[in-house]
Image 1: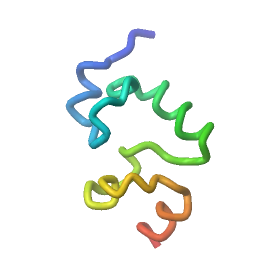
Image 2 (image 1 turned 30 degrees about the vertical axis):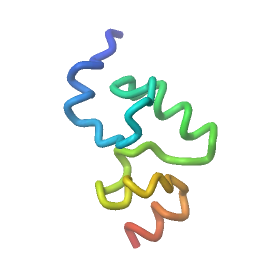
Image 3 (image 1 turned 120 degrees about the vertical axis):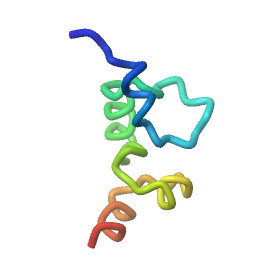
Image 4 (image 1 turned 45 degrees about the vertical axis):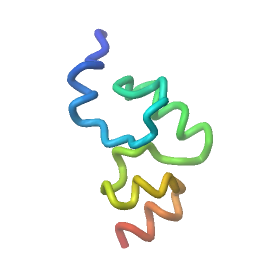
Length: 63
């Protein structure tokens, strides 16, 4: 399977500029799940910019 990094970058709302995983969704998801978090794309922009990507924040945001 070919990575669609350039297309993914158009949709990526991650505000952490030095992130080496931007546009590589598989790597991003794996990294965040390993750290008991969700990636930026799971949050609206105003919540994402807090960089609190915990499951608890996700639940609070969408409940």
